[in-house]
Each structure stands twice: as C-alpha cells, then as structure tokens.
Length: 422
Image (tube, rainbow, N blue to C red; front, side, top):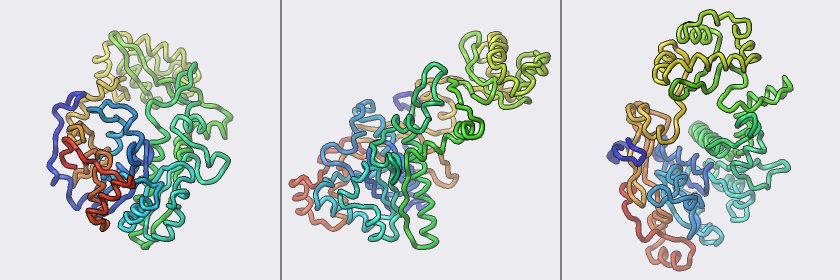
C-alpha cells in the first residue's frame, strides 16, 4: 500500500450489501456539515444504514471546500462522507423544507449539527418533529447544549478545546496547543452514533423514538475525567507533559544511537524488567529514587536522564526488539508517511478502494470488525448526485423535478465522473 493508494483492494458490491450489516434497512437523514455530524452518520453508513445527506444548493457541506488534496476533493470530506447519498436543497424555501419532511416520512433517524436555533427557524424544530414522528430518532449536536450562558455561541473544535480545558493539558510545559485532530468534533460524533444505536435498540423494544441532545462541550469534558478529578480532589492542575505522562515515569521519548523511541513503563514490574532484562542494570531496581512509580515521578528528571543514557547504547531497531521481548510497552514515533505504509495495516488487510466523483481512492476499514460481514465502504457522493432519484422516490414527477431545479429549490449533479459504485 502506498500513500497514494496503489495496491488497495476493491471489494465487489455483494461483499457489503448483505443483510448481516447491522443497520441494513434503516434510513438516516442528515442535515449536517463539517465534522461532528458527518462522522456520526458515516459510522451509521459503514454499519449499513442508508444515509441521505441534505446539502446547500451551490456550496454544499462547506467541508467540501476545505482543501483540494484528494484528486481535487477535500480531505475532510472524503474522510467523513463515504456511503452517503447527496441531495442539494434550499432549506430557506418552503418547498425545500417540505422535501425534507417528505424524506423524514420514510426515515428512522435524523441527525443535525446546524447553528443554534437554525432548525427552528427553518421550520424543522426537533421538538415539533419528535411529536410529528414519534418513532423517529433525532440526534441534535450543538456546541454547548440547549441551556446555560454559552448555549447560543457558535462553536468550532478549537474553541471547544479551549473552553473545556483540553488545551490546558495538551502540549509542552512551555506551549499549550490544541490536539492535532479535531478532538471535540470527533468526541461529539462518536457519542452521537452511540446514542442513535442505543435509541434504535430502545425503539425496537418499546416502539418509541427519541430526541437526544449531544454537546461538543459535554463530550470533550467527558474525556477529561482524570485531570478534572485531580483538580477537584487534589487541587492539582495536571501539567502539560508533551509526550510524557503526568502520573507515570518513565514514559516519554528517549534517544537511541540512530533515532528515538517511545517507552511507557506502567508499573514497578515494568521498571524491573526494563532495567534488568533490557538494560542489564539490576542495581537500579531498588534505587532509592526509582524503586516505585511515585518515587520515579517525584524524581522524573533524574529517572529520564538515567533511562536516556541507557537507551543511547542501542539502535532503535535493536532496542525495539529487546523491549518487545521483555514485554515493555514501546512504539515508533511515526509521521503520516510512515502510517500510510504501516505493516500493521497492510498485513491485516485494512485497506480498501472506494469510488469518488474524481476517481478511486484508498480508504481504511472501520475500526469495528464483524467476523461474519465486512462493513460497508460506499462511494463519496458528488453534490446533489442523488437529488433526482430521491425526489422521484418521494413521488415527484420528472417535470416537477426539473421545475424545482430550475427554480433553485434543489440542485442535481448533471455530470458525475468516475463515481463507480455510487
């Protein structure tokens, strides 16, 4: 597998169209943009759901234009939107909103992450929809939730990372940073997918749908349990440690004769194995400054200096083998080029090929592996690619469809190149 996707495996459509897909037969309508909701609904699509993505006429999901890195398409968009059908609708028009309601008549799930109050202004108030469609599962993603002083604030990932305190524990002692991926968006997307699945299970038992609110702020705060409890009950702000760990030592990047390696010793047994079996220094096992993890943390600088002096005696490859043989957790510090070529992905057959409007690209299988069915990796849709088909499905005559397009209520993709499997 190369970084460009050569050597990936395309699977026949029959391999992913099985009724064994967990969400086969379920339909999701997504009024979504950017990352959080698209991630949630992409997971539902991977699990077999039909996902109908409602996009703006003209622009579409604004993540389509973040960059043009993937054969002219945006990297965020191809990551988050495989396996979906795109309908381009002007939701500021009454006829456009009526089309979405028609889609909801046939749907099991609605997910949205529009700006605060937008769904209400559009005539798609989630509470009203919940009353109108009592079996519908509605997942509403917001920045800060439906109450509180920040409820009406616009919320982007970096802002949530700052407001939640995530930035305060991320980075080096000298410099606070945000995470390198949109953690707040990803957290909200994961909890939304989980909530939808739970609500569908409850509906199967009770016949009742659900209205669920998911806050990016709450989702991110949930991930901060350790530093929060340290503050609440020990009065300690967990420091920024770079690659280190505030509560464990040695746990950091250490130099080798030809590079570096990450080592993480979780307990005193690990320390004993590291210094005795790997370094051949059993005299360090009961060193008065290093014998227990609390002592090693208290004397972190001396501990790290001692470990670094010993790791420098080995090449990275030799030290990695020795650490693995001794059962010491260790890892290479890879960049994205190394990740794209990683043998763990290649030898476990994780790469597939998916279709896009600009030609096939590489994609990774979802992290969840079912042993009896491969999850679905559908095509990336062009903006409005499925508009005509979906309007026909809800009963619009061909001349009505063309009239709606002419009036700008909807838009269709007149030309879709190389979108095999769409």
